[in-house]
Length: 130
Image (cartoon, rainbow, N blue to C red; front, side):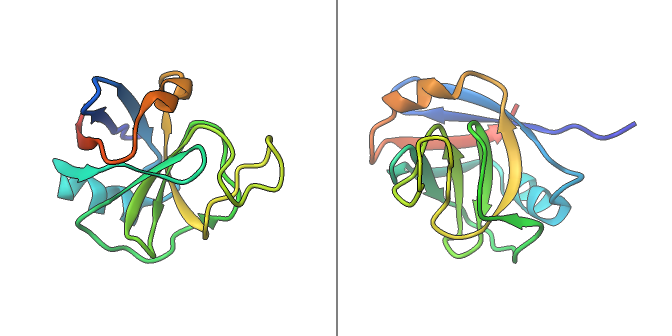
């Protein structure tokens, strides 16, 4: 039976999302994330992407240069965790979500990612095991 891990990402404004992690796809990245929990940071925005610094580093692992609505990814160059709820500033079209650089596909938002549109830059964010 495949091990399933989930995290909860909570913002200062009261918005919370729960994400299922892709342990099979990016095991080193997910294990490093879980080991670093809980994480507290500040939200940054880049188009319809929220990203925030994390206290661990992992190299590229099955990195993608196009992501899907609701994806949670790790950006090794940050290092940062990224939540996608629409096109970024580098997306060539409204239906093509392109991160700044390739990212490790870490998980998937289990809620409606549309709620992330209410998050404001600079808000405190906390990541913990769900």
